[in-house]
Image (cartoon, rainbow, N blue to C red; front, side, top):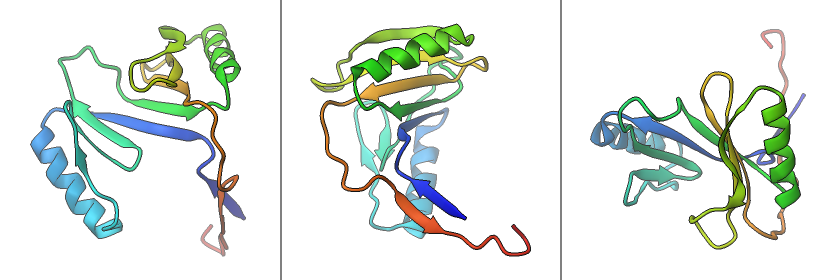
Length: 141
């Protein structure tokens, strides 16, 4: 069996009710899993690799957030239209966002209230299609 990674997700965001406790936890588990990955503190939270942790602001935030990588602006539009047609709710129509000058994205709330995004960052060249692991599931798989 083969597993491919690095092809679909752009980033994940989770919300915390106790930012200090969350930062302490993630620093500890990252040090155990991969000490080369550093926790970076920003204006509204902290991040590591492609995971962002931001403060929960009352009960108004979606349950969670993740973003799909889009290959172009047209993909962002297809994502948005398909999601609306399949019962998703608008949470931000396709367009440029303030995160950086080429950040083109659309946001939908899925049926459970998760904030789902498709984002195109501008032209890029992948160093590989994906990272591939060969896995022997054995008798316990």
